Figure (cartoon, rainbow, N blue to C red):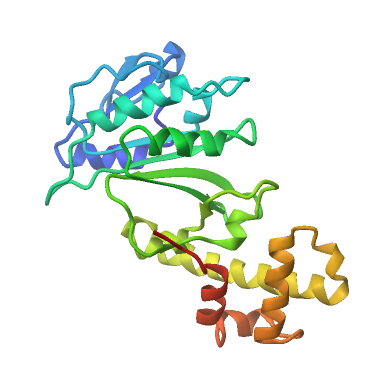
Length: 257
């Protein structure tokens, strides 16, 4: 792309006397890049990346990797990209703990799982799908985060898993905050906690009115447990303050081995 979405991160990389390289298949997009921040290469990311092994500390992608899969969800392009990307990243040691982070817009419901599978099967020992409300609205965005080592004690999120019609192995930023400090933006964490409490309260209210309104079985069962734990008339404020630790344990129950 133009590099505008990544300007902050790329600027920091340049200030540390490092270097950044951007790729895109569109010459027009590359012409918009600030060449004082990064170098650019005209290429299709669905092909193998043309870099030496173990040369990059990290990789970010904004609104691009969903194009790895065509209308028939071909897997080969995604596998080639992930395999060559993991090869290009510096191996883990005391000074390097590489991560690949990408924000994407799935054009079909199968794209998130295809991306997750491509990462897990091609060099990344740990890959997670994240649903996050980046702009603090009801519209969520998809992210893929990949690490070189398997996370320990990283919980899943019932609300994130059931945000879409087909259940996926998804998480929210609260699940990852303890594992990776880059997810620990205090202002955003507070907003997400309040949003979790709001949605929990909303589930209770729907169940109070008519349990059949909640057509998702997992969320309906969650509503029953929330009512039993906090009462049918609990307020959102009490869920955020008095009961939040217990609420969080209910919303993030399962641990990934």
